[in-house]
Amino acid sequence: MMGSLPMLGWLWPLLIVIGLAMIAVGTIVLVRRRPIPTANRTSTARELLDARYARGEIDDDDYQHRRGQLR
Image (cartoon, rainbow, N blue to C red; front, top):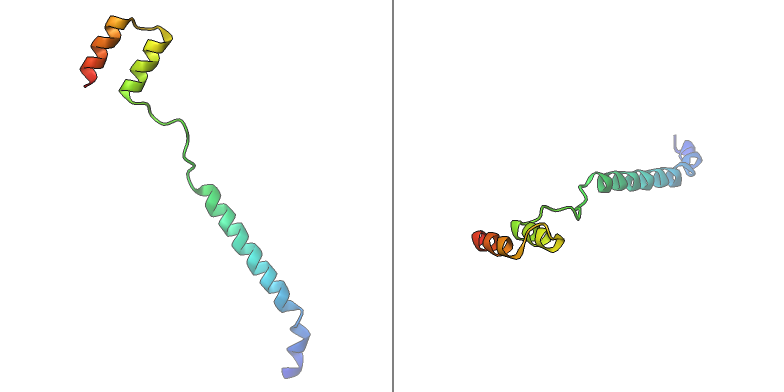
């Protein structure tokens, strides 16, 4: 029995490499499954109003009136 253990000496480094590879693959899978924060967040009402005013969709009086209602 003791005589067969030295023949498996090459197996231990292989098992270590396989184990490290499994840890690496597991880490990559977990990182990719995590939700990525996106820049497409929901805009606030004030930001939407400012954008509409900047694009010329509403005039100054309408902008001032709506901005006053948001406060």
